[in-house]
Image (cartoon, rainbow, N blue to C red; front, top):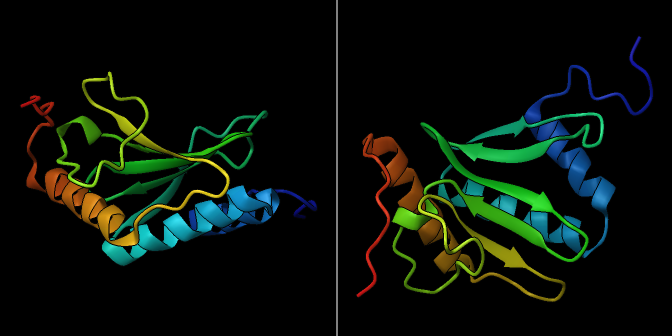
Length: 144
């Protein structure tokens, strides 16, 4: 018997839907809009939920294609999209604005009222998928 509020047996997509609904405010809207951009950029993307624990039973939404492309986490003041190999990606639109010191991950923090450029974001997802599916190791970009 499934208890009300239980997440047992739910697919990753259902858990992500539930997380978006649970947030309900601008953070849920942001997570939902960016999720749609990820799926538009890569229709073959796999949705997963990782790092589930009692303090976070719905876990962290993860989008993968031959490896993790990015994660989406909601915090009190922002929604963070962390690209696993972001340091190796070209970012001509300058979307990355967080976790820039790392050799692997880079992130995009979106605060209330902020939007991401859909075309630039989808290009970044496409580049991440290309890197992931190429089998190449991520190498940090060198500053010019």
